[in-house]
Amino acid sequence: MALHDEITQWKSNVELVRSEISTFQKQLSEIARKNNHEDVMKGIEHFQNQFTRHLEVSDELMHNLHAADHELAEKAKKVGNSDKIFIKENAGLRGQAEIYNKLFLELKNEFHLFLEKWM
Image (cartoon, rainbow, N blue to C red; front, side, top):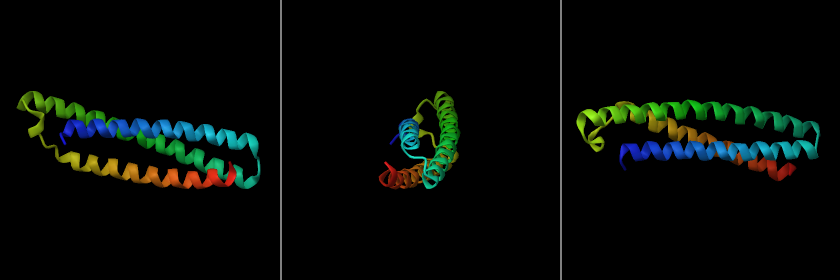
């Protein structure tokens, strides 16, 4: 897969995660309206904090992706073919994207268990 395509795919994934978190936040509001039990409120606060933090990480990753894409475009102008460009930092960026996905999947699974219990 071309580097630009990979970066574009990662950007799309970040946008999808942001959308899912928005849906999760709406579900938290619904649970809060229906139940003010102490355990529920603790769970709501926990997930609000987790979602806020994950959105912050999303912003950081998206910034890094835009910067890498810009760097790739600049190097492609010089080289003439972006398929021949290898950016050392891209391995780090790939790692960031993989960890981001892993952490979101864990958060999503934990949240679904919370929903099953309180929805």
